[in-house]
Length: 341
Image: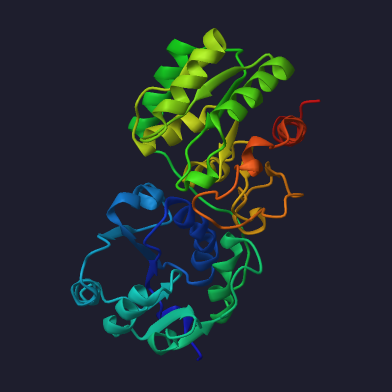
C-alpha cells in the first residue's frame, strides 16, 4: 500500500505491557519522526506501565487502559483521536481487535496467525529471530521507513532527578564507585539466588573497591535485607521508591548488574553500563540493548533458556552462574563507557 508521508500527522503506537517491552519499543521513535515530518506520536499502554514513555519528548501523549477493559470501549475512545495510522507493536488477539475496530485508515501489525484480518499493512510472521527491540523495526520495514537509529529511550522526570541527587549527595562520597544491583524478576526462575548475589557483590567490592546500592521493589524485601545484612558497611539499601524514582537512582550508578527485568532495560536505555544475568530466558532476544551492556549466562546447561516460570530442577542456571564472567564483562563495558583501563 502506497502511503503519502505528508498526510501522516498523527500516529498511535500500541504496546500495553511489560515495562521492558515498552522501553524496547521506543526504538521506532527516532525513525518515525525522521520519516513523517511534524508527526505527533501517541502511545497506548496499560496504566501501570505508562511511566515507560510518559516523560519521553518524542511522545505526544500516553493513553492508558486496563487489562480487563472492553475492546469496543477502548476502540471507541481511540476513534475520537482521529489517528492517521496505528502501529500495533504487540499484535496479540486483543490489540488486533482494538486496532481493527478503530477503523483507522492505515493499520500496521505483525502477520501472526489469526490476527492478519486486523491490519492492512503486514510485517513478518516470524518471532524470536533477533533481539526484541529490533523485532519492532520489522513493522517500519513494512512501511518502507528508513532505519536511521536503533536507540531506545527512557526519560526521568525533574522531581525524580532531585530525589536521586539528594539521596546520592547525602549517602555517598563524591569519589565513590557505586554499583547498583537489581535482584528483581517477574518470574521466580529469573531471579538470581541471594547467595549468588552475595558472591557477586563481594567479588565487585574486592575488584573495584566499590559500594553496592541494593535497588529493590515489592517482593524483593527478603533478598535485599539478606544482602544488606551480609555486606554490612559496603552496601546501602535504597529507600522505598516508585519505578520512576528507581530509574533515577539507576541513572546515578556507575554500573548496574540486574536480573532479566524491566529495570534492566531501563538501565540500558539510560546509557548506564549494564550486565544482565540470564537463565530461563534467551539473551539473544532479551539482553540489555545498548553498546555498553552485556549479559552472563551458564550456557553449558542442557536446560538453559527453558522459558519455565519456576525451575523444576535445582535452579543451576543461577546457583552456578559464573561470577568471574560477571566481573570480566563488567570491566569491559566500564572501559567502553568511561575509557578506563
